[in-house]
Length: 358
Image (cartoon, helix red, strand yellow):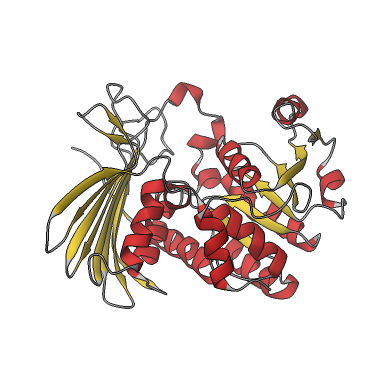
């Protein structure tokens, strides 16, 4: 087993975690384009993509063409029965992610799913039982932190005490709807789980991570369809407040109201307030300046700083996940943390008050 120091030394330099062929993976169910980010990041960290399966064979074949050595499978069983495959990555329809994960873990493989990792508390109970019984991992692609260099750097700053003890995290997660490009399941609440379950999961995970909370209460939550009556099951707005077990508070807003004038899909921001300063992340765009995203603002007791970290930090989670799977460790993310974030987004959705514009 590698020690934590080796993990940090290896991955701080953005080296590959393994040699080619040492960590074979598969991609199954390509329903959300996040699967491309998930797979590309794992491959960049050293994984070898062997199989791709989707019920639409042409879709799987198109992805396989991008990865020399990868093959489009004719069935899910063809993937799960391959003893070489260590991990299966998936971006299935949200309501189907749990069932696929259970099959993956039963086949003796680790599972890496897009967020939200499930859509009901019953599914969450099934996952927890299967993780305990099989010893396999059910990891989650909380990309707004894990695949954001500003998000990664903020974690380093918080860990180093740059702003003292974190007392509040505020997250803003606007998205562009692009309704004409969305599949039918996107507008079916039973399939996507609701806005706080879906994109709210990013925000809750970040709250837990930056505050160091092991648990939290949902103190208030709201959801609504404020401007899209043609899609009656769409929730286009949601917000919530949290109180962590260490006393830190959180607020987040998620929505589908990014205007067409913005040059990216959403002006996602995070504000982390500490006892000795604050950090602001402008993740995807520094609006009005011409700069792209991954802008970090740090204000402490000495001065103000604003700098870009794009291309400078990397994404250590993916290499750490590979090593965790090989060594049965938990440096990338603990299983408890991954599932606690999922639980809280489900509880927020269940507790939310429905609102509407008059």
